[in-house]
Image (cartoon, rainbow, N blue to C red):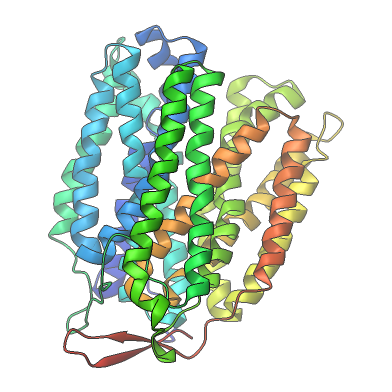
Length: 487
C-alpha cells in the first residue's frame, strides 16, 4: 500500500483517531437533528401551532453561528480531545431538556441550546489535521466530514423506529433522550481514547485567545469586514422570530438588534487588542499568513454547506409539490441528496490531495453552479427519475466542494486551525439562513438561481486563492521554530 493510501480497516494510530473523531461528529449531528423526523409527534404531544414548529426549526440553527466561533477558539487553546469531550457532555443536557419539555417555551429553550452541539464539526478538523500529513489531509478531512455529517440522515432513519419501539405518546421523548445519553457516554469514551497529537509532536496554541490573530493591517480590516455577515445572519433570525412567527415583540427585537451592534463593536475592539502589536510592527515574513485565504474559503462554504442545509430542508416539499407525490415518497427521493455525503465529501478531499487544492475547488464550484442552474429548470414536465438524478449530481458537487474547502483550511496556519474552521463553518450556517430567507420570498426556481449566482461569485473570489505550497512556520514554547509541510 502506498504511503498516500489510508487503510480504513485499521484501528491503530492515526486511523483509530480518525474513526473515533468522525463518530464523535456523527453523534453531534445525530443529536442536533434529533427533532426533524419526529416533528409531527412532537407537535401533537405539545399542541404546537405550525408557526411554533417553524420557530423551533429557526432556533435549532441560531446558536450554531456564534458557537462555532467560540468552539474554534477553545479548541485551539485547550485541544480537541478535551473540547470535543466537554462539547458532547454539555450538549447532552439540551437533549434531556427537550425530551422533558411540557410546553412550547421549554421546547424552544432546549432547541436553542442544542444549536451549541452543532459546533462539534470544528473540533475534529483540528484533531484530524494534527494526525495526518498534508498529502493525506484532504482525504482524511473528507472522510471525517462526510461520514460524520451522515448523523443527520441516520437520525431520520432510526429515531422514528426507536420512538415506535418505546411506543405511546411519549415515544419521541425516549428517542430524543437516548441521543443525549449516547452523547454523554461517548464523551467519556472519546476523552480516554485519543490524544491531541501523535506521541512526540507539539500542539501549537495561539499566543492569545479571544479573537483571531492576523499578520497585517490589511488583513485586520478584512477580518472585521468578514465578521459582519455573521452578525447580520443573527439579526435576520431575530427579524424572522419577530415579524415571521411573532415569537418576540418588536421592542425585544429592537433590543436584540442594538445588542448585536454593541457586541460587534466589542468584538472589533477585542480583535484590535489581540492584534495591536501587528498593526504597528508586522511579524517576519516566515510567520505571516494571508487572511484572504480564509475569506475565500468562507464564501465557498457559504455557497456549499449553506445551500446543502437549505436544500435538505426544502427538497421533500419541492418534489411533493412539483410531481404531486405523497410526503413519504417525496421524502425518500429527497434523501438521495443527503446520502451523497458518504462518498462526495471524501471524494472532494481525495481529488484535492491528488490534483491540487485550487484546481479542484474551481472545477467543483463551477459544477455546483451548473447543478443548481439545472435544478432551477426542473418542472412537472421532467421525468421524475431525471429530476432525482439532477439533484444527486448537484449534491455531488456541493458536498465534494465542502470536502475540498476543508482540505485547505488546516493548511493556512496550524495554531489557528480551530478558529479558521470555526469561522468557515459559521459561514455555512450564515448561508443557510440567507438561502432559507430567500426561499420564503420567491419561487423554487428563483431560489435555485440565487444559489447558482452566489456560487458564481464564489468562483470569482476563488481566483484570488493561492495554492498552499512550501511550509508554514510555528513557534515552540522554547522559542524554536518548526516548519510544517503544507504540500
